[in-house]
Length: 255
Image (cartoon, rainbow, N blue to C red):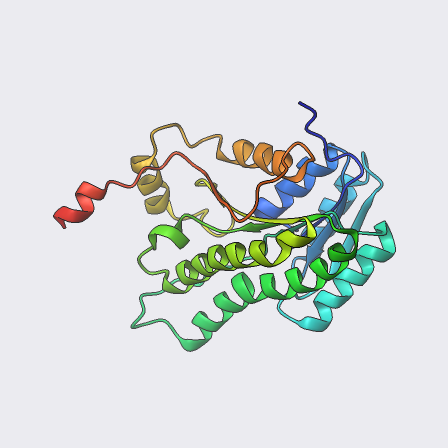
């Protein structure tokens, strides 16, 4: 099986750090043309760009707020100007702003929904418009297991990631006629800037996992490589849990 992204133009939103950064490095090493997108983390984005161009000159760095239409348009235009087309869009940008619902502010709710969900609407709309005439392309939306199970103190985050799943399934039906696939990926527990200091969540993930969670990042990157390649075809509208957590329904019933 030839799992290759050589020469593919891949846009990764929110790729200056965390999971997005790791995806950019992995795909760039595999020969993809990478568009790094950032908003506030300029230094980290520049550091990533300089790292990648040491072994892959096909790399663009574009500052854009993916919650704003004009910025997303600019991101799309810069991508087409640099690489001629976009083959894969990875909607990865996301934030957390946790609180119990009685304490959560309206601003906390709106910011998380805006970044985690509205950005996917804008990016998918602009980039799919470029894919449609060519009748090819892939959109990969990064969701979360919390969008399926919920998470206490994270109604905003859980709602946004559940929305990503519904959005993915609906968009797959719209774009399938143009040979454009749309899938969602829910990573396993991975230590990032969003959860680095939350030991309780890591412990909870370990308790529900049937396998060691230490290599979750590697598993995710390998799957992203596969799903971005031509080896992965004719699959759309699906949600992939790159995880080994099994939810104990008997425990839920007993509560």
